[in-house]
Image 1 (cartoon, rainbow, N blue to C red):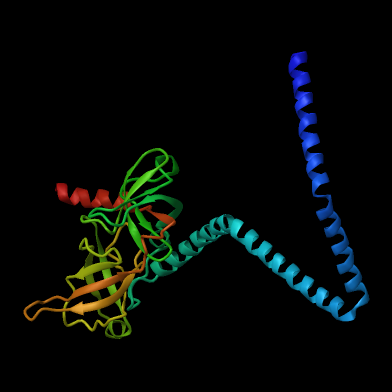
Image 2 (image 1 turned 45 degrees about the horizontal axis):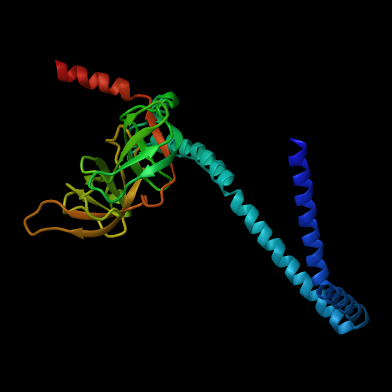
Length: 300
């Protein structure tokens, strides 16, 4: 800095300080009033029991309110870490639940899968970075790709139920076509107490009709099956990308035409796609073996 610039800087600082002091001098009576006001309040509180108790109660009230506000702010700031911790914990619980469900898939107890089959599903957590719900063909973008072991064809589920299937991957991202897609369908099963007592299955195909993103159509279920509103709809055992008994939704309306052999069922989806944040990508370790065997039969 040159000497002239330095002198100009010093002169400017002095000028600002002088203006600040002049301001304080002009409002000196106001500061004096505040000073005596505080002394008066202090003397009043110290020498009058009523005002002393009132001051004590009021100060405790506002201190408690400020502590409560500070705690709420801290909890809000920590929500991101809490969510990550809960998602990680949910993965472990999801693995245990699926392992338990897959270990006894036959209600009659005549079939018992081995440990390899029961443990064939694995899960990876991913965050949704983009999502559409109002198109005819809706997609999600998640922040995991081929470098994370994600492959096209893998299933995707959320905390409340199924979400969709991986369509394509880059190294760090994947595109998932959701169940709100014209080409997506899933083998589903309706569950209720009467079906379980009769030891029958109500299997159908679930598909979105392109209208309401909160509802799904379920077809090809025999009209004589004992199904009522409120029954749970889950993925069936005929899925290779989703674990069976994964929630799809709840039966909201049942219709049947006079000459139709099947119900026309509306299902309220358990997954709310307008607020989805985290998903679980499902890996079936036995998919390759199953496809290879099925392709060999086709070729022959």
